[in-house]
Length: 225
Ligand SMILES: [Zn+2]
Figure 1 (cartoon, protein in one colour):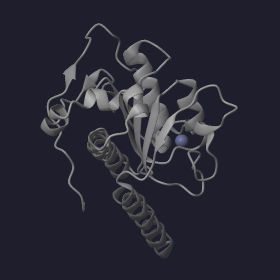
Figure 2 (cartoon, helix red, strand yellow):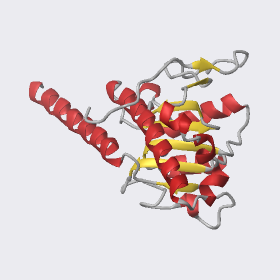
Figure 3 (tube, rainbow, N blue to C red):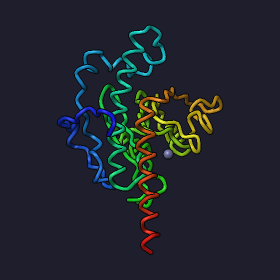
C-alpha cells in the first residue's frame, strides 16, 4: 500500500455484560475500542470530536486538532476498507467515534451476506447502537472512506449521527454533496456536519485497484471459457 496506517494495538472490552453481535462475527467486536494515538491524546481530541466544539471551531489550533483526528481515524477506516478488499468486497470501510473512542467499525459485506443493506456505514451504525444501547448516536462522528449513498445518508439521519467525515467523493451515488446533499437538506429536522476529501486519494486508489483486479479476473475467466 502506498500510505502508512497507524498500527492497531490491543483492543479493550468496555462492557463484558453486553451480548455479542450475532450477525457479524467476523467483524471487530462492537465494544472494543482503540487506544488513542499519542499525538491524538496529546491534542485533547475529545474536545475536537465533540460536535459543539466542532461547530464552534474558529481558531487555527482547533482546526488543526480536528484535522489531525480526522486523518488518524480515516486511516483506521482505510484499514477496514482493506479488509473488504481482501474478502472480495468493494473496499469501503467505516469507523464510528464517540467521546474519543472507536465504538464500532464496519466494512462493506454485501457479497458475503448477500444483503444489499450491508454497507460499511450501516453495519457500523447498527453496532454502535448496540454499543451505546441507544438508537440515538448524538455526539458521534462517522468516518467512511467513500461518500455515503442515499441509503446510508438516511440511516445517518435516523441515527442522529452528529458529523460525517468521508474520503473519496462518489459522483455516481454520493448523497453528501455529489448527487444529493441529504445531510444538509433544510427540510430534514436533523442536520449533520460533513467534511469530505480526507485521505481521498488512498480511498480512491483502493477502489480503483479493486475494480481493475476484478476486470482482470473476469477477463481471465472468459479467456479460459
Ligand atoms: Zn451506502
